[in-house]
Length: 169
Image (cartoon, rainbow, N blue to C red; front, side):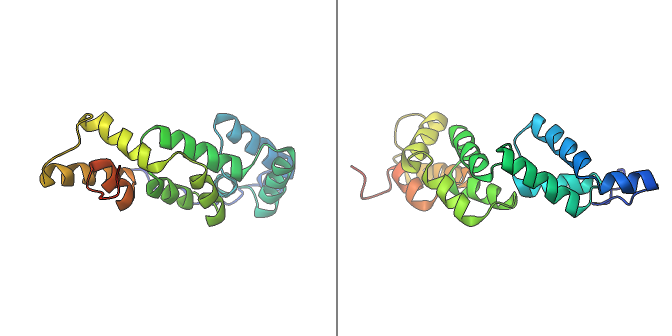
């Protein structure tokens, strides 16, 4: 297995040191990264640092991109929730993923609240995997509950989806 690269490589020459401090070069690298896929500001800052840019150059690039509207953590969070909810993931797992990407808790909460009805989503995921019939035995309910728990749904969503919730209509 090859050795892991350092998080922030040291400049090898004066030219590399000059490039590392250049906000225009950091902006160009950030635009190239964002052209591949949307990234939150924290992850983009880390990637610029891994490419050898100084924290000041990376911060200047992020500020310029934010002013243009090309970098927007709120938009990223809403898009992330919509995409992953459509793929059958629940709010707990999506929230954990967004926290790992460095988004602030208030942004995560707002994005999850704007997402789908999570009880309905849990029921749809369960039906897609196990069929429309609600499980009768507790063993089957437990098996389906474990699946939904892995997907990131809360206990309330799981009880509603498996028919174990006394409040279901």
